[in-house]
Length: 321
Image (cartoon, rainbow, N blue to C red; front, top):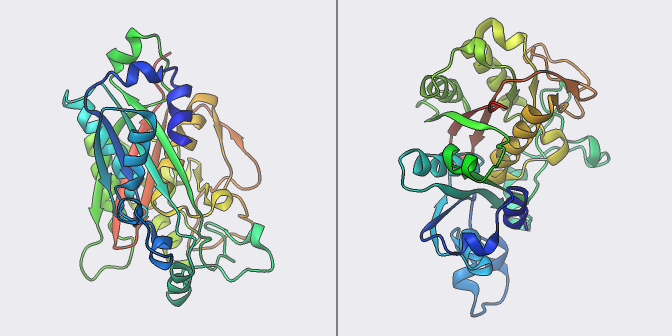
């Protein structure tokens, strides 16, 4: 469904896409289909149970002559998938690509594992208020599922067919947490790499779409990394986490953040961090409490951190009108 929505929103014709040889479909997933391990074996189990299944299903069901690539590095998976697809276009190996992520971890064993690691909120009596990014009362994330895909396209190719892009992908960086560091510390390096790759200066960043899972430690670490990288700029721009609404859809989270940021750039409206009520002295940035905020945005920095200590950052900019 997400793939079809992306194709239609881009004004593309399925029959034309089916004529493209080696159309890149780059998917990010955090794991394989966990639920199949607890069901009776069936003829489709081997194919459906692998991480590659999501991209394969899209290509087969839509009839594409595809080149299939799958990225799996926790919650950073779909953001990294977008970067890989963008690199294929930048290097001339493709003019157009379908990229993003799909994930579902709604199984008993996954929930029990998250509970054992104390990563989930215990606010069971108020589920709609449980995901509280950067809020002093946060006590863990809310597991979610979903899919998010976008069409990436060479600028000249888009212009030739009269398409108006939502945003331009201008920079990307990825870095694991250094050995013996606290979880999420590598996000600082990932952001610096994204700025250098663009290349852009901190003062050219207008907004941040944060990883912000509502985790007591990770939210604090990300806030401090933002201050070290963006310096004074970090306290003058909106920093929002959409996970107060979406929960944490694991490997799909980065794609959802990119889609939200692209819409914010187009409409000049920053979504709020839902359920942010009580300021935390360790998280002292502008998290857009309460309501959407009108802002003339030019750029957005998007952050993700994944289990396994991987971190990725990506920079979008509003394209010229």
